[in-house]
Structure formats: C-alpha cells, structure tokens
Image (cartoon, rainbow, N blue to C red; front, side, top):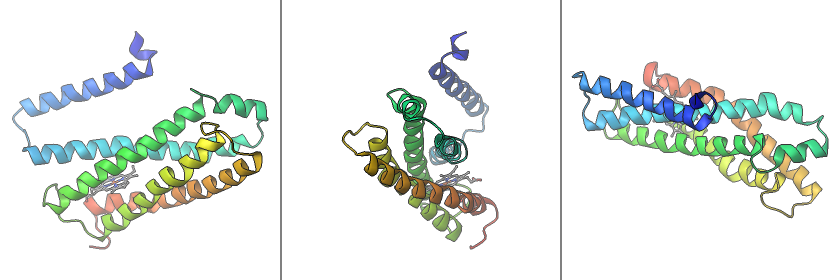
Amino acid sequence: MSIFTNHKLALAAGFALAAVILGIGLAGGNAPDMGELVGGLSRWGHFLAGITWIGLLYYLNFCQVPSMGGLSAETKGELFKADSVVRRVMWWFRWGAMFTLIFGLILYMGMMNGGGTSGMPGWDIRIGGLFAIIMWFNVWFIIWPAQKKILGIVEGATAEEKLALGKRALIASRTNTILSIPMLLLMASSAHFRLFG
Ligand code: HEM
C-alpha cells in the first residue's frame, strides 16, 4: 500500500486518523467551546512542530555533524545537492521552528485572554518562551543563512567563507541544543508544576 512507501501519504494518513478521532470526540457530547478548541488544537500543533524541530536539532547535533568531518568533498557535494538528505533536514528543521513559534504565540495569547487550563502566563513560560525565541532566531537568522551558502543554494561563497559560516552556524546550533533542555523543563513546568509562579 502506498501509505507505507510514500511519506507524504503516511503524513496525510496520520492527519486523517487524528481528524476521525477528533470527530468522534466532538460528536460524543464533550465538545469544548470554540476558544478551547482553538487552544487545544494549537497545543497539538505546537507539540507536532516542536518535536519536528527539536528532533532534527538533536539529529543534526548528535548524528549528522559529528560524522561529517571524515567525509570527502565529493561525498559532501552529493549530500548537499537539491533533494538531498541535508536539504530536506534543513526544510523540515526551519519550518518546524516557524510553526512551533506561531502555535506557541497563539497559546500565549490564549493564556493572556484567560483561555486554556494553566491560567495567566507566569515566569516559567516567559523564560521558556524567551529561550525558545532565541533558538528560533538562531535558526532563521544565523543557521539557515549560513547553510544556504554552505549548501550552495546561494552561490559564490569561497571555501574560507564557508568554513567561517560553518563555525558560526555550529555555535548557534550548539547554543540551541543547550537551551533546548531547560526550555523544555520550563514548557512543562508552566502547565504542571510552576517553579517561578
Ligand atoms: C518558539 C517559541 C515558543 C513559545 C512562544 C512557546 C509557548 C508555549 C506556551 C504559551 C505554552 C503553554 C504553556 C501553559 O499552558 O502553561 C507552551 C507549552 C508547551 N510547549 Fe512551547 N513554546 C515555544 C517553543 C517550544 C518548543 C521549541 C518546544 C519543543 C518541543 C515546546 C514544547 C512545549 C510543550 C511540550 C508544551 C506543553 C506543556 C503542557 O501542556 O504540558 N515549546 N509553549
């Protein structure tokens, strides 16, 4: 069956199954009001985008980057070309970051307006959100612009420039890896065990 061979169909099948589950839940008499539904679906979107982003951040930091050093320039050229694994990672990585931010801001606004289950925003989510926004900035304004030149999507960078950009992107990426761990603690504590009120 093509849902087992085509990743886009597998993705669509997951959303279709979720829609069926949602429909059954709503029809079962437990329908939330519109505000709760928007908040709940935003939370779900936030998790989906967040695991996509942070999953790929950990893949990059713990798997891809440590294994790149030993590869020849020819192999790197193959890995960096259009439709390659590295370009696909960068696409899901940066859009994962963007949608995590968008859904996170919707959740934050919902809290400000008194919606949701965890009350008004406190310091946990302010600090956690700040860490995550710094991480989002690093993805869109440091890592991705550097990667565009390193991968050859934007042409014309010299070998020395690419080396310097690689170091800059690595520092931003490692910073994000470090920040991600307390950031997730604060995302969790905000709704379940506030540490800072
Ligand atoms: C990009 C900026 C981000 C903003 C503005 C943001 C904002 C928020 C807000 C407002 C909440 C609701 C907190 C509450 O109900 O008390 C939340 C929850 C959450 N966020 Fe984020 N977030 C961001 C990034 C991330 C990232 C990168 C992840 C990684 C997966 C993440 C994971 C979570 C989780 C797991 C929760 C749910 C906590 C729970 O309900 O148990 N967030 N976020």
